Amino acid sequence: MGPLAVNEFISENTNLFLAFIIGIGFGWVLESSGFSSSRKLAGVFYGYDTVVLKVFFTAAITAMLGLLFMSLFGWIDLNWVYVNPTFLTSAIVGGVVMGAGFILGGFCPGTSFCAASIGKIDGMVFIIGLFIGVFLFGIGYDIWDELYMAKYLGEPKVSEALGMRDGVFGLLLILAAVGMFFVAEWAEKKFPREEY
Amino acid sequence: MNTTATVERGRRYLNPYLGGVLLGLVLIAANFVAGRGLGASGAIKSVIVTGMEAIAPDASAGSGFVQEFRDSHEGSPMKTWLVFQMLGVIVGGFLSGTMAGRLKLKVEHNPKITSKRRLIFALAGGILFGFGSQLGRGCTSGAALSGMAVLSLGGFITMMAIFGTAFALAYFVRRNWI
Image (cartoon, rainbow over all chains, first blue to last red; front, side):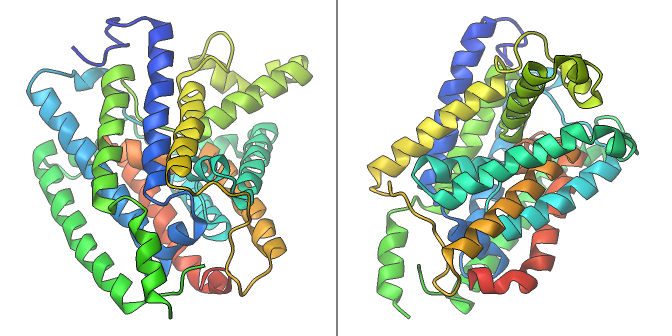
């Protein structure tokens, strides 16, 4: 059955319309969870507010588990679901640059749009920065082309890389997430900070 | 410390675990409908490619950046899944903020720093994040979260690099936040 668009159950335009609806859900959940506040987002790096860790990892394990079960029930063919390719060098270097941007700017791209949508000027300025950053990457593409394409590993799953079945890795990830949730709850009590 | 105010304000937000489950369901919906996860930086790339092609069509045709985009996209760069999804994000964020009474034009910053300092850091952070999202083939949404949901090795690596680096640098910019 799924994915609907890939299997041509729905037209291209319906797919784009549903993208808009799914986006509304995405934005609504992010904002409702407090991701429109850079103070709450940065809190995870100082322990006073760990909402990022809780929402992010709960979402990751929910979606992973949901997709594995839906595949098991035959509702979705995971062979048709996009798995991000792994270019080892750029995955690491890009992640490091993004991490620096995260702690300096207090947002990531999705959350900055949520912040801007409710009037946060710091979110809007972050978005201006995003456009500049993407543009700089675009015009200087030839300079980092080699780095960008280095160490291509295909589209491996982390479970394959570790020689595990998907379900076994999924279980370990859930256990790791629950462990992190306990640490997060402890940290919020240990490092409280005043609201502003 | 004013803990009562903290608790009261915190109540207006969703329980984070409930928020996480809902976000996970949205991510499943994206995969079920479109066969791909959520994203944010991809929509910005679409805008930049549109702008480059409009302003400098000849130079853009020879640009590796535009070519790489064109290898996987036909037609208008604005008629893509992530552009429509991001328009939805703006609407969804606005609706949630309106319902919770959080609509307000302001610069949110630690009272220990000026709003000018906050905005300079926001701009610098945005530039780095924008650049890094292109290098890493996606941001926290597209590479890390959506990648993890489909067990992509690259998604896990990028997630660890983002959060690890932010943790490692947190000490040096602590004055901005605490």
